[in-house]
Length: 302
Image: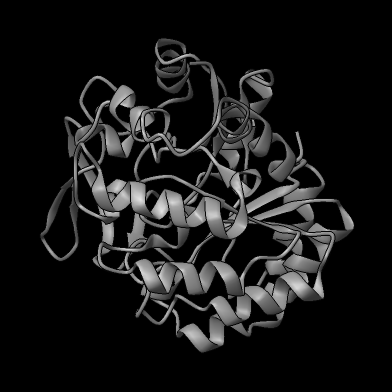
């Protein structure tokens, strides 16, 4: 099935910095944190020390992905220049997001350059306590930083979009109260919450409550890595339960297809991830068309 994948990652070379310190590639898709812990970032066919735009385009061609939205995370290292160059090189295939740390002392100058010279209208902030900004910043200081408000106001003025990874419920980064405040204060700002709020299994009631709380006109939810968070393969009992809750609570028009590739390809095939949605018996053909293509275009405004 042809689709838009609204949650892809490329990195020219892994230069991560997050909860385990610096994150350095050691070859074959493997990387080592400063803590000494190892992790497989991608399968070797996707890259050795990084995932290039060309590698991602080949991946997209294999899986009939018409357009890919490139998101960022601290665990990969900020890749703003590379993503801007990649989007310029493949404008019909790639949509880019910038990322920025509100604590940068040169925040204003950097933001001006990103929206001016680099033409970014979409930003992604990884707020999580593992691969995100809350892994090395105090969460209250981060969520209430004046530069976060400045970013949101700037994006709203540009008809822009802000993507947020809140991390798992129960962690300090998971601040749905601040997300709602931002959405209400900036009604023309589109907000996409990644990973359907990052719920692990056995959190069905909390998922429903948080979706009800965040059911606003300018908030969408991407579906990337739900089954990674629920730690399951087919038949995806918990992941499909969460899909049903999401559809019944916010509606299929608010759900955006994404996978978190290339990272998740170490555990799942693309076909397996798509079957979680297409074979669930939850969505109509019209709803599947919206989830796999139309909703991403509306939420990310392309």
